[in-house]
Image (tube, rainbow, N blue to C red):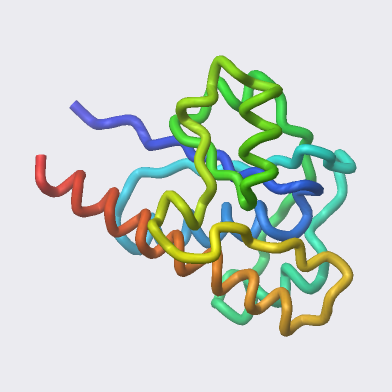
Length: 158
């Protein structure tokens, strides 16, 4: 019997920088680790339908992720219910999600905290130069490396 893919939801504010970068970086890391994973992203204040910022696209491209398509979505109860785990990019996002979706509070975590890394918040790079987006993507990817490795190790120890 095949295990269904783990479903992750990444949440930031506008769903045009951090959370889509997290989604695509997580998908790549999971694919490379041979893990079944479905990732999605959303925002707490998204302008629905907007694409990723060009800076976010360039930060992904510098990591070999190109040609991905994204449209901003507003987080809702259905997304929260579908996710196995919800990773907020800041503590403020986590707290807002826990208030709005109290029934799902137990599966909400701050991405870097969940990975056991210092500096839990991944600050919003919107409007900043490419170098800030690169740092943001690095902080996200560092956390994902830990979490994906943990999931890989857990799936192979069963």
